Image 1 (cartoon, rainbow, N blue to C red):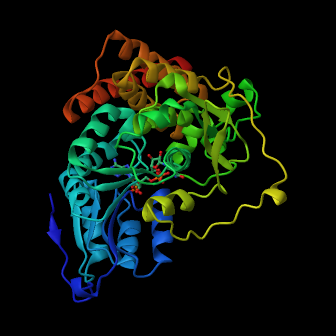
Image 2 (cartoon, rainbow, N blue to C red):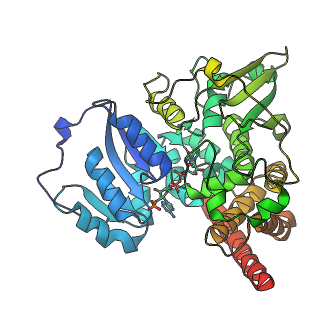
Length: 421
Ligand SMILES: NC(=O)c1ccc[n+]([C@@H]2O[C@H](COP(=O)([O-])OP(=O)(O)OC[C@H]3O[C@@H](n4cnc5c(N)ncnc54)[C@H](OP(=O)(O)O)[C@@H]3O)[C@@H](O)[C@H]2O)c1
């Protein structure tokens, strides 16, 4: 629900705005700010319609003013007063709450950047998919929580889904070199028949060379210190345990309709090769770029064209060598747990995601230790997912299953704390 509209003479008039319209959900986050960075260097190419955050009202207001947005929404109603005050006199509309977020997501625009973190992004992004929006999808948890439903909704609504995750952007560029299809359209079955495996790379994260004992002692500061990428806290913790790679396999499975047994992960510490496709004639085609999210963001903003991104250019001779290793599922059990969930189906991945979000939150607030994340997720999977749950067929079913799994995960976090204490 839109709570109010701030009035001012400073707002841009419709006539003065040119270029493609763009809304950004999760504008105050790492992906959101990188998107603004790419867009702000291309004056006249994009005009920002709506921006959203959870509760960072100050940060959102600043972004909205600098980008010349028309609407700014905070998901948390408690942040509304601060947003309204910060936008006072700017002419930018301020709103709060879930309904306002959905309204922002479904405003007609040329492109919507979906960069909320976690399952909180599902309802607004799904609503945008149903309206046939061109969605630049960073929020992988949407697909992990309700991938089948999300892709079916996108197909039925005539939406275009463009991957933002660097690995999926890479696969998209490799699998679809003519750039005629978006991932919700069915890829040419003959071309897919020629594909043996589809591989995404993992940097290995900050604990790649650490022993299991060292990992057990790591706190949030160590876990978020990613060697190659600057990202939000949740995805950084996911990366440290390789859960992020598991979530990405599930994402690829839904985006490209690739069977789990044809998907693979290889650890590649330099993060230069982002993904590759191996064909039945022995050819392997890969996409390479410096590890900077502004490259895949620019690709999704420009598709099917390519627009400039202000990133370091790749110099392979300067780099010297690229290395690859097999992931160690013993030290990083979260990857194996996620693969099992992907094989079990969409209900299991809904539970996986919910349990992971609760556990990561508990780790970040120092209530549990790093290895407890995977243990709790696996335990929740045992208790909820393997009792024969089906695929969520609607948003309500997905949210209900998500809630159940969160409740079990919270109880297990409590038990862990009690046991540890
Ligand atoms: N960062 C990367 O390099 C990267 C790469 C690939 C994929 N991704 C994916 O992109 C998504 C965003 O990641 P990020 O690293 O940009 O996250 P982030 O830096 O933590 O930012 C998250 C954004 O979502 C908003 N948000 C958080 N909780 C919300 C809620 N309950 N309702 C509505 N909005 C909420 C935040 O608002 P506040 O600021 O008010 O909290 C912020 O704008 C994730 O799904 C991640 O897996 C990220």
